Amino acid sequence: MASISERVKKDGSRTYMVRWRDPETRRNHGISMATEVEANLLKRLLDTNGQSFEIAQTALIENDKKKPTFTAVIQEHLILLTRPSVGTIHTYQTMLDLHIAGVIGHIPLDKLDYRHLTQWVKTMQSKGCSAKTIRNNHGLIFAAMKTAVRLQYRPDNPCIGVELPSDDKAEDEAQFLSHAEFAMIMNAMGERYKAFTNFLVTTGTRFGEATAVSVGDLDLQSDPATVRINKAWKRVADSQYEIGSTKTRAGNRTVSLDQQLVDILAPLVAGRPRTALLFAAPSGGRIVHKLFWHHYWVPAVASAQAHGLKKNSRIHDLRHTHASWLIQEGVSLFTISRRLGHSSTRTTEQVYGHLMPEALKDAATATGRSSKSWNASLGTS
Image (cartoon, rainbow, N blue to C red):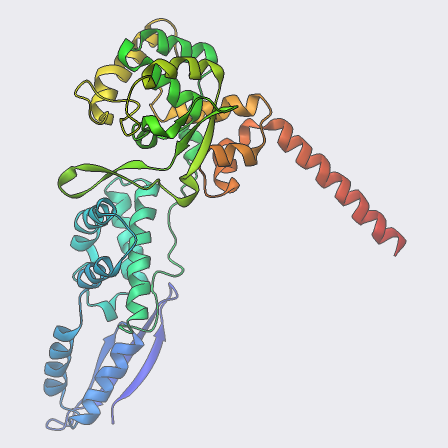
């Protein structure tokens, strides 16, 4: 009968040597297999076929043909998804085509292991992909492998334990404008989009949310006045867009409006149907991010820089700026988190916690009081 011996390499990885005696030549042979599953399969085929490696090898090849490739499994995973929008599926398909299929997609599902995934991470890094891109793609891989386990294609998920590059850059990338710096950009902003730009910085809404707000979402008569954020533009097939749900469930929220913004918005809603977009492009349709950025935002920032602005701010930095202004006014982290539509205060703290020195100081003081009480109790016990 064939036998299997395990060998531990210097790097800690393991290989499995399958040994058998050829029935015709009576000579001993051995072959190294990468996984225990492969070794056991070869041993079983050898024992079943009188130790004939030729027969066993043919059976192995035929067996591999029956195993789905990793690309096929991800495709099946995408088909089985029920909640994501068409745009999200399109994004996943792009990730598969661009970053996964050409690197590890050809590997039979049962052969995919930790080494393949680690090498995939290194390949992504060598291509210059950011940590966020790598983590997003790995998230798709991980989810597809969970589906594979659920469908009993294999017993384990090899993604578990794979080390990914750190993605702690959110705080460094975020830029915060002072009131004076924002005023410099507003002074140079095209007249058509001044109200829209003011809305972004005053509400902290995402671009896709703000451009999807309809007249009926506003309640300018309540105290305080509010806007209901419950939808956003989503990319669908063929790079088209349609209005769908917000980024997360927490994204559905009501945002209060200050009186200055109410005065700006009042003329925009007067006499207009409730279903009309509050902010629209000259054609009356959706404000396209790329066009707004190129024709209005970039020129406004450049003009502000010519007058002393030192930052190269992005449109999304208006959302960060909104949060920083609230922090300066002493608004709680919980309130800011709900206003921004974050799914948890942890997200808010990761990006804006460093702007709250008083809160950090209070936390340190509270911890100190707890430590004193704890130490005191130890001394009296």
